Length: 142
Image (tube, rainbow, N blue to C red; front, top):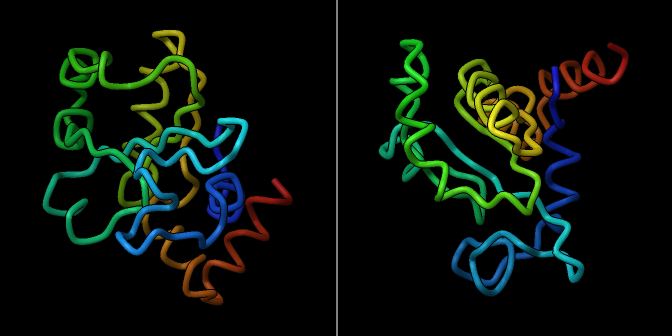
């Protein structure tokens, strides 16, 4: 898997820095590093799921249902909304559908990775859960 662990993503996004509006930095674009090294976090889940729980500074393209059904056209038709000059990290609930998004983006020439464990992994990481710690160990030794 061309993936990134939640702890790696958090570090790349600047850790727990927030501006009071739930964004990782002051402008909400997710670019917290002075050198612009922060990835573009693309959440493909439905809008309702994104609105109830999302990674600070992420961007939502609600194409989950289409990708899950095997239809890549909804994502391909919105590629202009995704920057080509930054690494893209795709996110869904568990990481399975986000892998499809990552594959599409790679085919289109993007530098893309999938968030390991999706939002489930992210929330487990943020909570410091035992389940996340075990999964993280597994991801590291694979």
